[in-house]
Amino acid sequence: MTPDPSEPSPAEASHCATSHCATPRDAWDGHARSVICLIGPMASGKSTLGRAVARELGVPFADTDALVVAQHGPIADLFAERGEAEFRRLETEALRTALAAASVHGGVIATGGGAVVVPENRELLSGVFTAYLTISRDAVAPRILRDRHRPLLGPRPAPDDEPPAPDAGPLERWAQILAEREPLYREAAQTVVDVGTGPVATNAARILSAYRRHTQATEEQQK
Ligand SMILES: Nc1ncnc2c1ncn2[C@@H]1O[C@H](COP(=O)(O)OP(=O)(O)OP(=O)(O)O)[C@@H](O)[C@H]1O
Ligand SMILES: O=C(O)C1=C[C@@H](O)[C@@H](O)[C@H](O)C1
Ligand SMILES: [Mg+2]
Image (cartoon, rainbow, N blue to C red; front, top):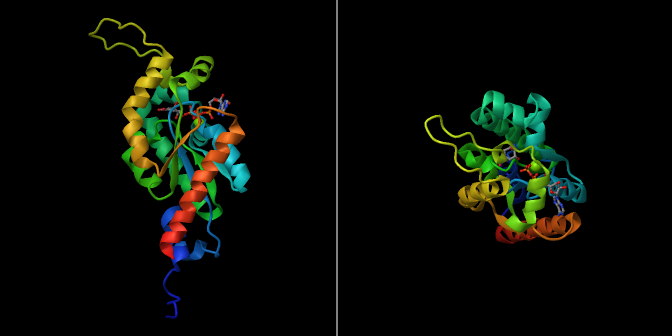
């Protein structure tokens, strides 16, 4: 049967479904763009590995935390002065911007550790290949302990009417937050990649293999 030129081809339709094309027909030039989003707990390596994967694929890299910082200043200041809810709003804006750019040029996007707590972000992520990066508490410990800029891992102020609780410490808080978010990470991801051991290049290669397996499986389904 001759394909109807007014309809997107299977490859085009798939590209547009997975890349958030604002104007699918105009943006399509016959080449599928690689779009990969990385989610996972704080310090799992989303930013570091995202940059390495983007370099390997030859596509742009975007980091939603960095986008927010570039436009609005340090994350710790945003949390302290404008509150977490406002940070989440800015994070969603950054994710939308990054996805829109990636739908045209391809791209790898590192999200912030808490992106999955916002339903709108999960909806956005559902349109692209999303990898959940996992890491054990032992493996993440040195990273968390040497780098103290993450506001959610700082001491929690006790509510006014409660006596101060013993400080759980940043690593315990990291583990508690991960336990709360784990189902959301799993729900939002097409694949889970353990990045707790090995150098950056090895973990970047693991993410790329998972992406290529997924792409191949999708293409097989469309045949
Ligand atoms: N494979 C690796 N081996 C050793 N160190 C790593 C590896 N991947 C990342 N790191 C280091 O771990 C730290 C945290 O990594 P990174 O900032 O990429 O995490 P993240 O998931 O983006 O964190 P956040 O959620 O806070 O943005 C950095 O100091 C980075 O250099
Ligand atoms: O896990 C989180 O909620 C966060 C992770 C970081 O990437 C930043 O987005 C911010 O510190 C919040
Ligand atoms: Mg990061």
